Image (cartoon, rainbow, N blue to C red; front, side, top):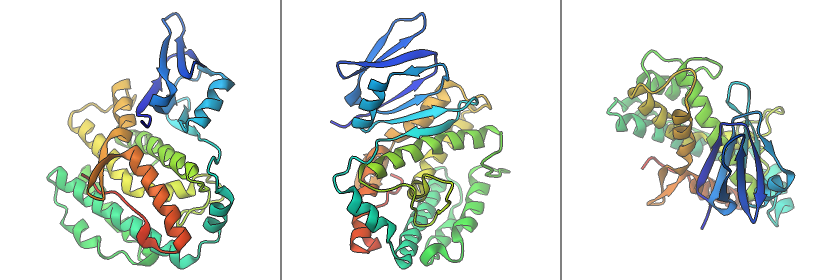
Length: 297
């Protein structure tokens, strides 16, 4: 059985391993143990936590994504397994040598699915989605006319009234979105690496300063699931600029939410694996039709 637990560490503690179990030892409190095989994600929010090298080694071996956070408790780093795939060299060379037409076709498919999911999310909240429905069929190869940006403006105006999606903004909605996206981005990177892909080389994102260009491509259809959680929290008036543990737990739990993939409801963690595997197939066969992307259940 694949791991399913996400661990949020908010207190100063020592993390070690014994008998293939994560040992959590907070200061002045009783220790707790969790089997490593049950864990998929660990978020270290407290900068006074210590982690043994033995645990780090097993985290890599068990394909667990480990996040660190900055002084504002926002995820700022992700420790992922280092290329355990037996055909890493072959896959990385194919990925590096991808032709531009294939990249453009893959990006067209990714953005089309993102807009479809954004439209479905508006519909879920009984918000007018007609303009996004009209845009989803207008994405050309490589999104040459930047339909994604047009759809985004209409989407954010409707999902959160009088709202500007600014990554560095300090309002509660943007802070929550950034937190949730960081968690999902790390899960995507984890899956990409586990299938022998190099996250640095994307199909659209290509910054030399970004180690996760491909993750930033593949995450796009998943973003509306984070938006869903943030919208619900906003409706319940549970958002604040300080992001309590309950809000962070809800955002981390996005990874266990289900999406629709080939007529099945599967967790986002599983979706990440399927997308990574199908991306490998797409680049091997130079055919974007093999890329599997999820829709909102």
